[in-house]
Image (cartoon, rainbow, N blue to C red; front, side, top):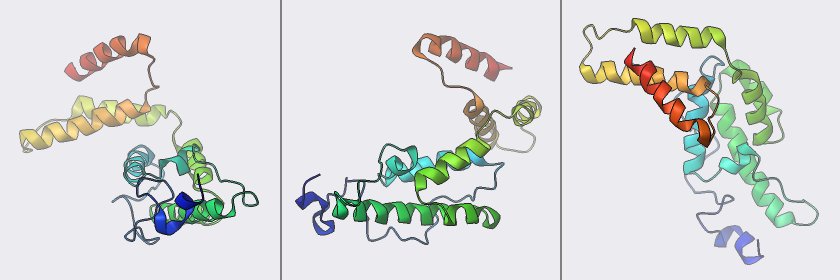
Amino acid sequence: MGDESSKAGNMNPSHPYYVHHLDQPGHMLVPIKLNGANYQSWSKAMIHALTAKNKLGFIDGSLQAPSQEEKPTEFALWNQCNSLILSWLTHSVETDMAECVIHAKTAYQVWSNFKDQFSQKNAPAIFQIQKSIATISQGSMSVASYYTKLKALWDELENYRDPYTCDHAKAHQEQLQEDRLM
């Protein structure tokens, strides 16, 4: 990153260090707060929001802090964005979970901790989702509402499955279709 592009006034809006004037620390990026049980939905929503703001690299580890001694200007910009994301994370978790965000040094550290804590395979949760899929009925819901609810359950169940390699993708799609026909 050259000197000119690292100056905040000349920052390209597509650069990860760019902060739009509407990106405020007190904003909640997503409409749900993490409570632990809703990690799958919350993390997907946060990934979408941070991707839209070109800040995903701060939580996935692909955008590491530059050297404060060697690149002080770039470090200051990185630190500003990291602090902004930490603030967004603080406002997107339940109050009892906010302490671990407040004391963290990086957004990546917080994201990794939440992922380690909440994203393990959870057999009881998977069973509950499968049970909900098996017992859901349209009742008085419209077809659109029924489908939306059923699709949300399918998507939630899919989040618990391991990613598939190209070799297994076709078999996975066939299994998925079979599951949905039950």
